[in-house]
Each structure stands twice: as structure tokens, then as C-alpha cells.
Image 1 (cartoon, helix red, strand yellow):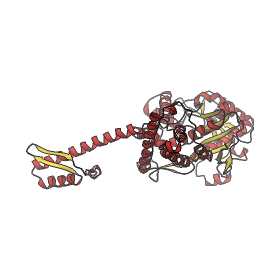
Image 2 (cartoon, rainbow, N blue to C red):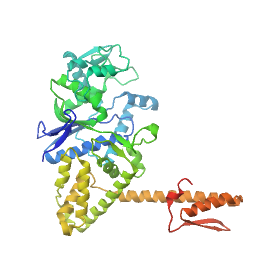
Image 3 (cartoon, helix red, strand yellow):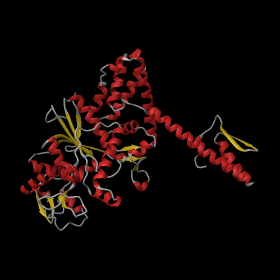
Image 4 (cartoon, rainbow, N blue to C red):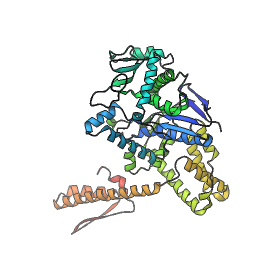
Length: 473
């Protein structure tokens, strides 16, 4: 089946034609590991997880690389403020990332290189850029000469002159040109560093991905992905230094970028109080499959808005799918061992630039057909089960999570009511009957039955109890 993908480099949807059909190669920029992954970090992971799954249905081998940036000034700052070693921090946060992404159903890539394991390759690439006249060393720094690469800015659609005109930053004295960017920088005694021809130092961010991609995928490969916030300057700089170092006309054939994430229509930020991590949601009782479903409900090239309504809708769909999945496997044991085939329309939807909303719509229709196997045959049931698995929902456990949340909610409700009843009792003892009557009226309005006896105040839920009416009391 033909796959068509939107290529940021050409601003068009193109037929995907791998350089080597026997081994499709894909690189995706991974996290800088110094803290928990926030919800926005999960979006590119899920987008390219779906692409990875799709490619594996069409090609005999797919090599997927996603890196860890484990040398960075943010990591250095976290180590300084916490008193912990950089190695401890990056080891712990890398595992956090893998655990959290696993919880939302993401497959692990074939290679997950750490930047610190490829310092020698970075130094070698930088040396080649200097020899070719594309870079220069000054004051312990090595910088890339942007104007030596005439296609700089093509990916992001910017011109170098316009970028300089719009800049409002002080130019470092060691730069020949304001647009030149750092390939290597010096390290002091407190900062991680490695010996190099330019003194003890550490790599710039951009050179890391170029060196790791070359080492694991070659001078040119098929797909490079990441969030659209990386398009400039990170991906632009990757292209420039890779093409100049490797003597190629391109780094990747297809560049793919996902849009950003919002929460209830607003940009996620700590200042707005709507910033949360994947782990926050998981610990609040939101199943990883629900996070995955909500993410995939929006096309990757559109802004994704996380809302409470979408979360509830996803929970409803997945609860029904889980019940159906268990019923089918119980009633038709042969489906457990059967080589179930993913529905062709699900594959077709994804082959059209990863149209995950359409794939989920098809999954919903398959579920409806699978509920009536006598009418549609076991083929419908088989297709539903295979497609559910393929999209990353094969091990659903949302009902138990929903039950846990219901139990916690009930416990919270009892705690709230007990607190209000205690206030009612205290008001009566203090002969503050006005306050006592107000609290009693509010509890009754919420559907509680209140009984006052010599022993105190007792309560029970009435048939029309509404816990939401307790909010704010």
C-alpha cells in the first residue's frame, strides 16, 4: 500500500519512497532528560509511534532512532541546585521517560542513543567542518559559518538577512557573524567536559543529533521528525552541519513536524496553572490508554487541545472496547490464536499522512460490527481485535481504573459530608441555629437525608443525591 506523508521541506504531501526499501530509516528528536515528561512531550512520541507501526506493516525492516540529550545546561543547573550528580539525574529521568511513554502504549525505538556516548563522533564531525571551511575555532568555541551553507533557512522558510534584521540580541565577540551557531563550547571545572582539539569542553545541542543520526542511520536517511518548535533553529542547524560535513544534498528525505499541545484552549504553562506531566495524569487515575486515545483523536499537524470532555469521551469509548474485547475472546476462543489481520481501512487512513482521527472513526465502526458477529461474521471481530492491538490499545484496563477513581470519589464525598455534618453539630451545640439551618438546607438540597437525634446528627444518601452540589460548600 502506498504511504503519503506531508513533507515540511517541500510544503506538500508526497508519496513516500524510501532510499532502501529493505531498511526504512527514521530519526526523531528525543527528550533532554532533567525532569518528568510533560504532556506536550508525549505528542511527538505517539505521532511517530504510529508511523513506526505503520511502516512496519509495509517494509521488512524499519530502523527507528530516538535520542536522549544527557548533556545540557538545564541538566547542569538541576545538578547544581539539587546537589546530585549529573549521571544520577540523567539515569533516573531517562527511565522515568521510558516508563511514562510505555504507560501510554509507545513502542521503544530500535536505538535510543545518549549524547554522551557519541562525543568522539561529534568531535570528528566538527573537525571535518573546520577542514572544509564551514566552521572556525575561537576562544575555546567552535562555530558554524551559516553563510557558507546557501540553503540555510529553506526548511523553516526564513532568510538569513531577515533573521539578522529581526534579532535583538548582543552578538558574542567570538562570532564572525551574528547567525553563526555553536558546535563546541568550553567547560569550567564544575561543568561536564571532554578533551578536544579546542580544549576541554562540551558539544552544542545541534551537533548531537547530526552525529548520532550519521552513526546509526548513515549520511542520508528517510524520515526526520519532531515537534514544530524544533524546526528552527534545531532542525535547520542539523541540516546545515550534516550536509556540509557529509557532502550531501540533504540530511533526510522527509521532514515531519507535529503541532503543539494546549490545555482547555490555552497554551500549557506553569504560570496559568495548567501545566502537568504524564505522570501527574497517571497518578490521578487517568489510564495511559486514555491519554493515547485523546492524543490520536486530533491530526498531528493540527494543534491538540487536551480537555476534560475529551478525556471523558475517550474513557467511554475505551471502556466499551474493553468490554467487547473480553466478550469476543470469551465467546470465540479461536480468535486468541487466530492470526488476526488489521483492518485495511485503518491502514489506509494512516497511510494518508497519519490520519489518526479517521483510523479511530473506523475502529468505532469495527466495534459496532464486531458486536453482531452473526450478522457481519467473525471477520469483523477479528479485524476489530487486530486493529485495537495495532493502534496501541490491545491491553486495555480502563474499567478497573475507572472503578478505582469511583471509589476514591466516593471516599472524598463521604469525607466532605462528614465535615459538613460536624460543622452542623458544632453550630447546634453553640446554639448558632442560623448557621446550622443553612448547612442543613444545603445538605438536603444536595439530596442527603439528615436526621437529628439526642446522640447527634446522622445522614444518608437519598435517591436524588448529587455530589456536584456539594462543591463549594
